[in-house]
Image (cartoon, rainbow, N blue to C red; front, side, top):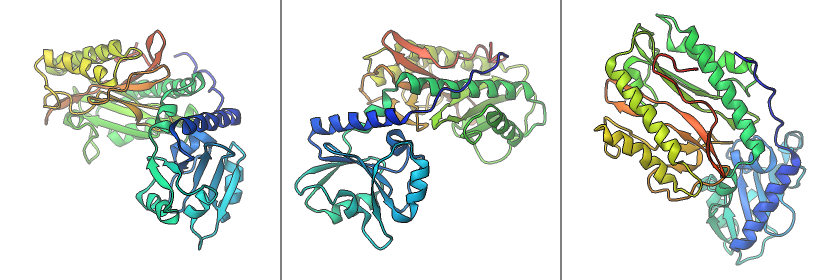
Length: 382
């Protein structure tokens, strides 16, 4: 196998500043005085700060006019300075003070403030109690839309993560032996992700043998690989916070004819969804394209089994599942820069399941694969 390329550069401080400026334009257009972004993936999007949410409020307040500022416990200031890529004004609070009042103390009454949709109910109530004169509303899609339209730099980071994971799954496939435990394969995959420079090894890893493949997210226990088992490997990693997420299902040994038949239908459905994923096409139309293939073979309809029990895909980026979702009812049109999974899994209850998962990104000319789809049930890689 050819060597992997060097990882792309991480997101720069200048890019984070431009994102904040873009959010400010959106706030002004929608009539909001400010946006509060909770700790988590969206905070990392705007600042580069890789902190998860806890019971202590850490948030970015982006005003429609003026300088953005970080709300942070005073005792975390040193860590904030060392971790954030972007230098921002700070609003520091002590343990016996209200962080919510600090966050919005400079905003006038009778204004509207957008709250990050991932903010906790406790924090949302804290804001409302601290400033009852302000109208706090859920973010009307400003952050979701910005994060969904990836730049070429973001796509390059996702591509590198995908390149690593497809290589790791291929190495795991060649290492399989009768009697191996799923846990052994999971450890191998984590080790290989680390060897290729992924952030903290595998972000997640599911390895399922035999009838366990009939459960989309697996079952308890540590299965032992047997000859002629179906094998499902679903794993991913992060590069500078940006995710990969790939699934391969293949036969270990001689495939059962019914396994092979369903595998081929799965691939046909995946390719139909890809062909439908054109700029301006509603997300739900991509989901329906996959289901139409399944229904032509007597599978489904809708979420009925045997068939596809869940959406066809999800967005990917700083979160492994994010907007846009490729599912019925989402009539949002696909836009340039959208990055989505394509995984119309077929489940035959209590027997087996087939999931092939690759991701695509939208260009003005149409969809492009991050990874080449699987080839056959016995030769999943070129």
